[in-house]
Image (tube, rainbow, N blue to C red; front, side, top):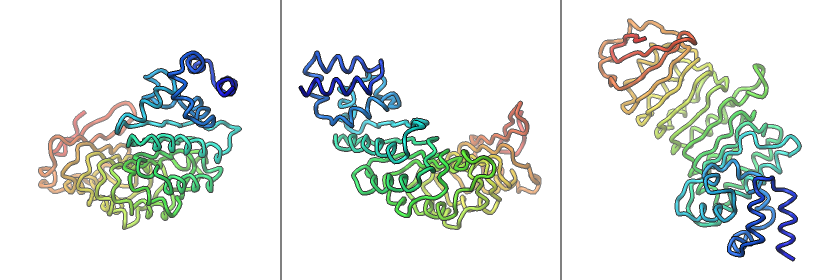
Amino acid sequence: MRILLYVSQLVKCAQKTYVLLIFLYVMFPIYGTHISELSYDVVQNICKYIDCWQDINNFGFTCRYFDELVTKFEKPIFVNCCLKRETTQSCNDFLKSIFHLLQRIVQRQGYNPIFLTLAHNELSEDVPAFHNFITSCIESDVKQYLFELNIGMNGIVDLPQNFNQLHALQLLQIHACSYIYGDLGPSLQQEALELISTMTWLQELNISNNKISKLPESFSNLVNLRRCFLSFNNLTAKSLSLCSTFKNLQTLHICGNALTLEAVFRVLPHWPEIKKVEAAYIERGNMGSVEQQVFESISPEVEITVAYHSKYKCHINHAGNLVL
């Protein structure tokens, strides 16, 4: 009876791609032992979101492989739920489903780092639901394994006060917050930037396209950043100077801001590990005023890309010369 109940429920929620799952459940007990450990809600959610789990895709769309993957010690799990909230689904139900899946991963005790993408789901429609989701992660073991969180293009411009309790988080993306509002949309709030600035363990931060006019002084505390994406805001040279403390910085995107290439070059010597700078769509400034020792202190391996026109790019070598 239990098998028939599961089969009837799965038929209702599964697409043709998952017919194999039902077939294996009925025909092979060895597969059934894996699936029967799962609640119906979890099985339903797996069927719904499994096409977004790139590693599981490679193993054939079955719960057996779901179990095998998340019990593989320290195997990273990529949960890509970008654009996955249905128009008829509430933010609250959507986020509860995601949290249920995260719990399932953690409960397998495989110490699997989780890389979670929730971008482009219009989560700003129910900000309290998003805050509750973050709180649920923090109050559970999920917070120990959440390594990446991408909440860009959702219209979220502020963060819950407990957000900085996600101590395992290494990669944070909150880009294009006002995307769903158009040009008149709000900017990422200073309170949110100050909260992010307390997360000194972050290694990658993307706050591009957020209409940010200035960074808080505390932003300089993010000394462990290796990759920083600040493009297409309204940042000035003063804000860029706050990044001079990022001694481990390897990649910087600073395109489309209210500063000059001259200002970028003056900060470059503070980043001994820098490898790549994207500085498109900013003014050149008075490059002639930059001291020669500044150019000499920059490694010839550093690539600075400037796009003055959409048809071509040019590179600036360590001697300050444009190379087409």
